[in-house]
Image 1 (cartoon, rainbow, N blue to C red):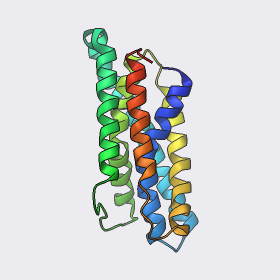
Image 2: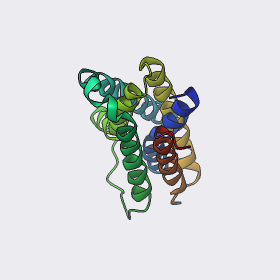
Image 3: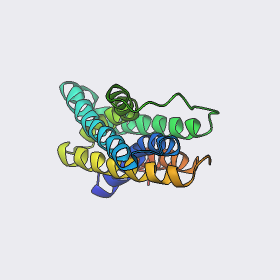
Length: 181
């Protein structure tokens, strides 16, 4: 997978963290710098850890699944893309928001589960994991931090297009993985 594709992947994976941070930006008007940093750090760290876990979890079975790698990569990205697009149109996904350490850890895990699968695709694509994981982590931090501030400025507006765009990008990466583009 090229670095451009990894950059696209990093952006697409960061959208969930951005959407959560956007929601928090709407709700939390106090201590904005602190809360934006906390959300960015927690989501960024977990988004960087999960692909590493996926990468190393799949390493023992790599030789068995390598012949099917193109189909596996396509299936994972296609599934994630459809999931992102469908979640963008689900009604009222709002839950009670909290910003304690426990909640931030749960947010970090919940927004980065998809990155576990991305680690598997990076392994099957023949990439090393640490630079892509750092890039994914950094882009997620920036996206979450920025989205928190945008949420505070655009209060009470529904924004679906980032999740739809992320879904389309993931589907395109899956198709590209089949070598038909």
